[in-house]
Length: 236
Ligand code: SAM
Image (cartoon, rainbow, N blue to C red; front, side, top):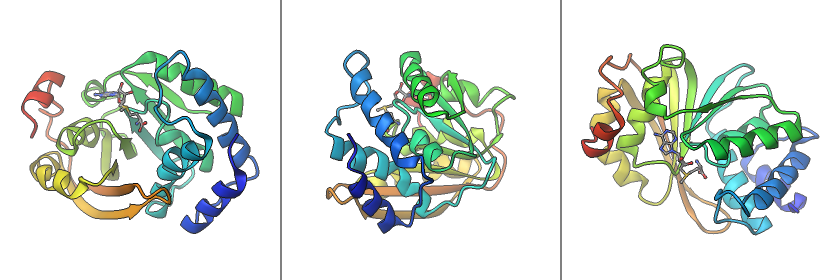
């Protein structure tokens, strides 16, 4: 289903290498994504080349900025059909990913893809802000990653409490990233973060993308994250 030459060329341009199983795993992932999408609403992107670029290559673009190490703990907040965490796990099978979503059916899809590809990771059916209050998860991750879940000021309150001091929150954003970042200045500071980097680029399809990297420089005050309704109605 996936055009291996296209994927190889795109990954080469980004300096990302896959092991021998990588492309086959992406192919199996794409095939299951399209199949599951017939009964669970997972994605509007279903053409093979679009899946390759707008999902897989897009998610792997994080690897231009981050070199993951064996055992790094990564939480993917609002993962949906596994984006960006599952492409990152396929490219780095020795990282320790927790796929988080408030909708259980989507996590069933991720488990199916992992089972089929011999991948191992945790899957958590919870709201991220509830995990941020729970000592089993709070300030325990080297990286929080998230794509297409909420505006950055709200997303910071979901993600930054989960990141340990010295770790990073990586938000995948689109053309409005600079404005979202300006609107999130107070949230980032209040929750113990500091902007490390923002970078904008275009996918080969012409779509605008941006990566925002926020370093956790101090502990998140215990009153955060607040209750879901408060986060949404009164964003920091
Ligand atoms: N990240 C995926 C992607 O890029 O394709 C999915 C994006 S989808 C638009 C947003 C996902 O975030 C949904 O699956 C939704 O259930 C989940 N979500 C939204 N708010 C959440 C929260 N507070 N905690 C956990 N999951 C959340």
